[in-house]
Structure formats: C-alpha cells, structure tokens
Image (cartoon, rainbow, N blue to C red):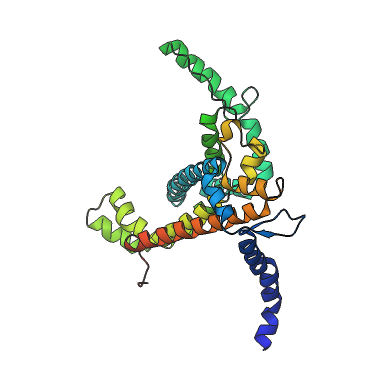
Length: 297
C-alpha cells in the first residue's frame, strides 16, 4: 500500500491523461462527432470512408516515403558519423558537440531557419549553387537551375528529409556510446587474423552495436511517422503544391480541429497506431537473425 501510495500520482495521471483519451478515441472512431454535439453511432463508416478517401491515401503515401528515407539515410549517416568521431581525430569533442547541437534547436526555430535557407531568391543554399551551376552550364552547355525547394512538388520531400537529417545528433550520440562499449580485444583478434578494416566493421562493429541500431530504427520510425510541426510550418496547412508535403498527422489534425470531424480523426489515430505497431512488430521479427545480444537474449 505504501508503494502504491507513492506511485499513485503517476497512476492517476496515466489513467486520466492517457488511458481515458485512448478509450474515448476508440469509441469516437465508431461515431460521427463534431465536439459541439453528442456523438452519433455510425459503426464502421469512418473506417470505410478512409478506404475511399484519396487525400488519406496521398498523406499515407507521402508519410511512407518520408519514413523510409529518413530511417534508412538517418541510420547510415548516424553510424558513419559516430564511427568517424570514435577515432582519435583532432578536436573530436568539438565535432561531437557540433553534430549534437542541432538536435537541441526547437522545431519551430529550426523550421523558420530552414525556410530561409531554402528560399529561392535569398536563401544561402541557392545563392551558393547558382555560381556553381552557372559554371557547369557554361562548360557543358546545359540549362541546370537551382531547385525550387519548397515550391516544386518533386523537391519538397527531399527538402524535408534533408532538414530532418540535420538533427540526427541524438542517434549519433547513442551509436557513439555503443561503439565505445565494443571490446578492443575483438578488433585486435580480427586484425591478427588478417581481417580488413571494412571486414572488422562488418563482422565486429555492426553485430556488437546491432541492439542499439534496432532501438534507433524503431524510435526513428515512430517519430518519422508522426511528423507534423516542421512540414506544417514550412509548407502551410495544404502541404505545399500538389499536397507533396501533406502528411498523415497533418490530415489527422485537420480533421480533428479545423473540420471538427473528431470521429473521423479518431479512426485515423487508431489506424496510425495499428500501422506503427505492425511495422514495429515486423522489424522485431526480422531482427531476430541480425541482432546479437551480449550474453544471449
């Protein structure tokens, strides 16, 4: 009873602010609910509406591509940078801080900065690219132009992925800690056996840090699937031209508050939960052969 008394604030907070909303959202997903009126039971109509909704599929497709690019590229870059910063490079403490600091910048501030960086006329990215592309055009007689980062549907997802990869400092720090935990004796034994540097990375480093890779992949997947603030600020509620930057959570938000379709939004929330759980389970199942734990499972 004493232990329950100590944890009771957490239990009450969890039940009121998490468990109760989850249960209510499940109920509302079977109703037509505008918040201003009592919910009306409509059964599976909201879920059937999702299947017929082209905007829902557009937002889902955009989110899926974004998740694949961010998780895959983010994992490779974070591991690569962590390996570089795990060596005796000069000023490595400064380099580690420089890579980690962007992850501390608030999302709103980061989005505003990157909006100016991507500006077609005043942005430093295109200001840097213009002279380079001009020289290439003069040499090769081509007509290459700087991208319209946030105005061209073909470049919007690329722009958001680049901006997201700028904040991979958290994952890098976790990989760096895992690399420092790899026993040096394994590298020495591999070197004595004549294993190349790449072979040591493949057969020693990756297996030893594989549990950390699994952790970062799953957390990265969950975070990327719920992306909202950055595209909403940089592209507006419509997600840019052709809804190229319109994501799942943005559409969920639009249905819940601006459109007051709380039942429809609740069904989207539960579909999102099922998708994330399914992808997480698939990753855990696929990782059984490639993730190695020290001392066994």
